[in-house]
Length: 113
Image 1: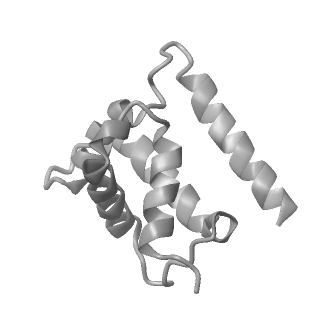
Image 2: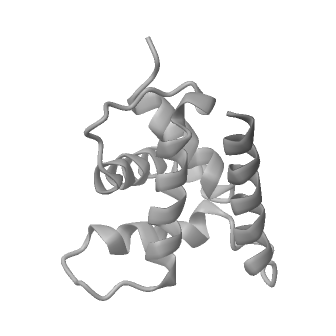
C-alpha cells in the first residue's frame, strides 16, 4: 500500500512538473475541456483528454485511499461522466485543482459504506 501511495504522488508530481509553465494548468477550468472531449464521439483526442482519463484512472485505482469504493465494473468513461457532472454542479470551484474535485466527485458517487 505504501508503494502505491508513493507511486501516485510521483505520478501527480510528474504531471504537475510537465505542465509547470502555467500556474493554472492543474485547475479544473484547464482540465475540463479534455474531459468533455472524451465524452464526444470523435476518435481523435488530444493531450487534455489523455490527462483527464489518466487522472481519473489513477483516482479509481487508488479509490480506497480517498474513502471511495466504486464497483468493480466502473469504467473510466463512466467515472469521467461523474466528474464532469460534479464539476458542472460546482462551477464556482473551477479555479481549484482538478485532482481535488475529481476525487470528491468519485468519492461522492461511490462512498464506502
